[in-house]
Amino acid sequence: MAAPLTEPERQHYFIARLKDYFSANADGAKAAEPAGGTGCAKAAVPAGGAAPKAAVVTFGCQMNARDSEKLEGILSEIGFEMTDDEAGADFVAFNTCTVRENANEHLYGRLGRLKQSKKADPDKIVSVCGCMMQETDEIEKLKVKYPYVDIIFGTHNLFTFPELLFTMLRKRGGSIDEVYTHGKTVLKSSADDAARLEKLLRYGSGKSNMKDIEKLCRKPVISVWKDSSDIVEKLPSKRKYSFKQGINIMFGCDNFCSYCIVPYVRGREKSRAPEEIYDEIRKCAAEGVKEIMLLGQNVNSYKGISAGADATMSFAELLKNIDDMCDEIGIERVRFMTSHPKDLSDELIEVMAASKHVCHQFHLPMQSGSDPILKRMNRHYDKERFLDRAAKLKAAMPDISISTDIIVGFPGETEEDFRETLDVVKKVRFDSAFTFIYSKREGTPAAGFEDQVSEEEVKDRFDRLLEVQNRIVDENLDRMLGGTYRVLFEEVSEYDPKLITGKLENSITVHVPGDVSLIGSIREVRLTENHRFYFTGELV
Ligand code: 5AD
Ligand code: SF4
Image 1 (tube, rainbow, N blue to C red):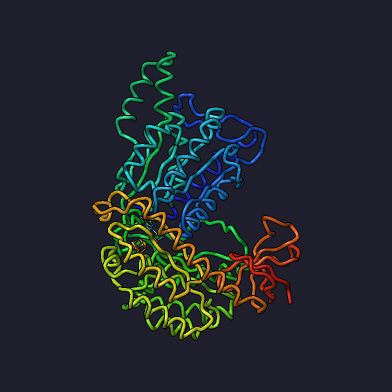
Image 2: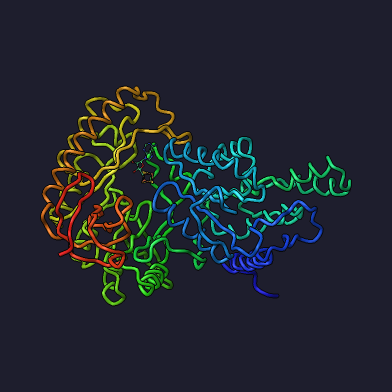
């Protein structure tokens, strides 16, 4: 008996079938409807030979951005051309974020705006995936309020997207018998639908009967896995930038900070094998990538295992190995994010300081400076330990730039707690801080805490924090003014086509007069003007 297909083989099989489907339609012919179809399926592609267009809209963090590149890779292989025009696209995917309430609202706004174009072109395919889809309530809401969504899938089974798209097209054609059901699927198209369709089809093609059939055929295909222990490698991926690339080293989070929904929607920590990571870096380098960003929810707890090895590798070891291979393969800069302060080891600091290519930049999310609040947040460090980690980073690398995340208004936060946060901000003098107002996430422990802080107090503290932090950023930038630094040029400035925008090693943006030939290169730049959040400069 032949061995069962591996997951990548299985998905490549569906990619090949979808490629056939869309190319058969691209010459203007009608959709190649599956045998026994009802007539409901129409070509989801433009007539006249033009390639179908796909828009992938990404919300949230770098991990999501990387997932979207994987979706785009699959879509490109099927034959789609990418576009930013959601309304005009034949296929739209929203890759969602749910870390704070306003991230959810973003999705609903965008979906609402799509309603008209879906009405004008019912064959357009609308898909929603990502972290928000790991929440059952959100899926139910989509089903009721946005019934024009065709495909819903989660973070753990993004790689099954070819199979789901194929299933959806078959379903539109009335072949509901092939609806995908996977052992791990927690929400799926109901098996009852298949039986109902069978019945309707037997009644023939009366007008109201056909309407019911059409409705059934257009119910969304939903497949969301609760968790997954596997990492599926070797599927297509498209790169957004030619010169820089995010590389997943691990997935998920085991920390369960009491305010955070991420462990529930991204699942348990899983580390990629070092060799898979090295292979991907080598491949990027061969394609001209200059800068890589190692990605994980908590890179400091990386525990990869090499084939045949009996011990796991730490993040510090992995980073050292990557730094060592950079010269040979031509990678200039290595970055990573995010790090949990509780797991930031001395070994990692030593590796960074001794490295040749690892940027002297560290994202160290503090969340709060108050010990009782940190305890209630389940962060497993206190103010002193945080200050010690920041001091150690600065002692080892005096030019290091440290950024952070801060939550204001966590339940129970008093004025005194908030002052502790301000105190750390003033002591560490972060080069940048992402400041968030606490957002209650149902299902997390903090959602059940009773002493929520009033809106006015939160707003007042948030404004005061920004004022202090902005002043520090300004002073830090002033100190760099006039100096010469290496800049990786990324794109033509959004505001002035005569300027090219690049990034310093510490991620600060610089605009420099120049032309597109600079893009992708690293050059020395003198910083001439501090615009508070960015610099202008000139090539030296
Ligand atoms: N409310 C506000 N901010 C949050 N973050 C995570 N969960 C919440 C929440 N419920 C912030 C943290 C984290 C960043 C990615 O998002 O600061 O570091
Ligand atoms: Fe959320 Fe904490 Fe995990 Fe970061 S470390 S993803 S804040 S649970």
